[in-house]
Image (cartoon, rainbow over all chains, first blue to last red; front, side, top):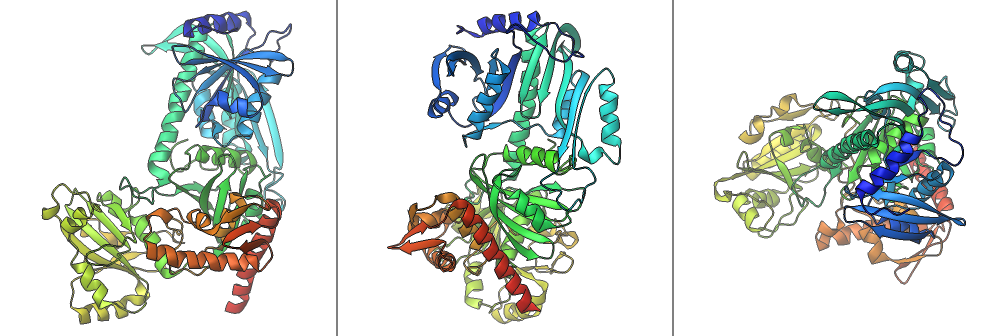
Length: 361
Length: 271
């Protein structure tokens, strides 16, 4: 259904989240057509409903006076409702109560087919900070090096571990501290109970949330207020980080503002054995990082790269050494490129990539 | 494929002006790169200005070619007030700001540069970069504004950063081959056509800010790169229009092979 304003949306979503009272320790199971509330924090440089139109979706749209856009989207023979909060135009949040089998592919397909819309990308460090916002009850850690590990430089090729339980925080800490494993534990998902805080004091209002590294929040529990409060906290934090990247790392050769950005440095804790092999995977359009480009050897173990980020079709330059990657982004490139590259390298090369460098992501 | 010394030096100069590095720490902002200034008809490589120090620095990269006394004399006539009138520098009290010329070179050029400057009789600051340990040293002639940053202790990590200003007119066309390649790879698909003039703009991030003379020299370099790609049959050029003859994927593979081959050939030649 379409809502008239934010308070009506709040009522609608509150009713749904309080219907599902499963504990965080339970695997999420919902039957009888009842779906969880899903909220997607995305980054966009264009009108999202217009983009859906361009991709061939039939969309009916209604704007409210308080920066909400109702979207009724036809998928197959059915209509599904999505509510887009556009208070922050570049970082809107899309809420839906639709089936995950409809909502997830719709969001992913739209982002994949557009150069103006992207996920938000939560690095391992960001996910760890998120997990500290509440009582951590579950997490997933993963690594998939099948593409980057042809010569078996790493002992672990692929790993996926999901844990539910009260010891989640301790186990995660243990994994991250373990010498053999610490570089193979990219955090892709955290589940925790988040309590609203007023004037520094924890209230009884809470929400259960599963958050994935690409900005998806799945919520249920007692209070929609807590959900909105959590989303706002994460959005503000993420926006600050992108702002810092764009302030410090976009190189302005036009010199309009008289400032000059610097390169973004990504340190690798395990030196690359064969840089050319690494670059062949890195610069493969169908590879995990979705960069396309050319490299040129400048000196021993020092390569210049000019490439296009296929997510946004913008040119970036890199210098790749055994133990570091310097990323040069010229004005007009989007700051979201850095957390995306870092997150994907963490998931496919080493999970500690970029832990100590640049803006704290 | 090592970038030429001049491009390297410009990049190091740029690097010194980025966050946390000496010039930026002393609040010197980069206000121009390779900008033609008339009068007095000269083109310094970089101009930095600091309102905090009421000071402008003309930073000229010297890569060891012939010393040009006339050029130095022209640089020495530049003033902050003059640059302000040309809208290059924005200084509230331009008349009260000083303006220093600093030559920036690799250490192996030191003797030749010293000799040239003495013969020319113009006061100029000097900064030398030691290629081996990446250290920067200054002479006594250096501008007082920069002395505060104690550049003697500054160490630039090697290998030098190279990609702020990707290439200049002095570069070999082979250096810009990857830049031309990516513009072709991403600019259009198989059988698409693009006018050469539109293509040039896609290559250099500062193309629109170059003067016409520099654009012309640069276009010649791009043409040489295109010609080299054309010889492999990957593109056709007719009536100033470029057409891609293969799919993007094939282009990517073939061009990377070509770049690797050039690289390998260079290595063989060197040994």
